[in-house]
Image 1 (cartoon, rainbow, N blue to C red):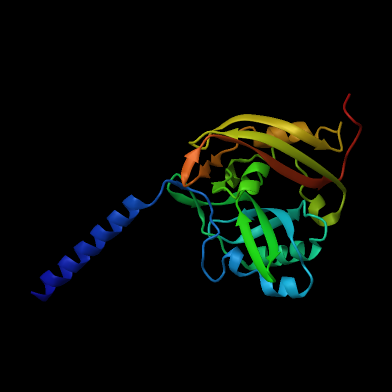
Image 2 (cartoon, rainbow, N blue to C red; image 1 turned 30 degrees about the vertical axis):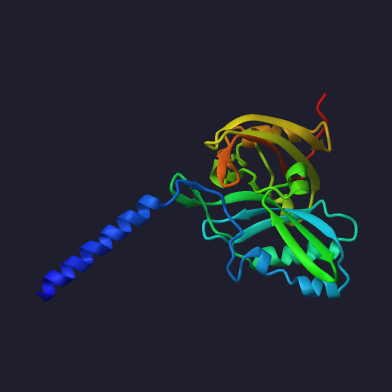
Length: 245
């Protein structure tokens, strides 16, 4: 009887596991979550206000691994007077945990875009974090997650990016891409909208790197959607050579 009971329990456990796996999403963006280490919960809004931070905004790009940990980030495009907010968002990104992204049913490393908005109203601090950088969506407070890059799908080596410049200095460059991604995460269009400094081939380098990129699709109100968005990229290189004609 005891053996039978044990076998029944084991069989039910296997059944539960199968059902759990069957309900796992095939595709899901990395999410802020709501645990104690969620990004929105590790930014001390009270201290920000006490130190003089007033209404402000800062954008960020973060590379998040399959455990939900940030291993590289950049903060930028902060509004005037938001230096303290920018600093604290950077500190928070180092210690926070995202809900990992899922691609083809497996956790995956991604690069994601976000915006942190801080407002003081009626003497109280308020913080909102949006997982996009679209002006209209931010202005309306829409529920929109911009597409997230599947990290393994980008060919940095093949595009001759010289990442050593991050550590040792060199000449900085910036590019911005306009990317269209369908509801299945397929890249449908890719254009370079900014190349700084111009004329040295950084735009072409970015196009080559992202030519075969795969994405977690954008999600609007919880549903995957076709969308076009701006995606920034930057770095440093040792050798500029001569501008292209």
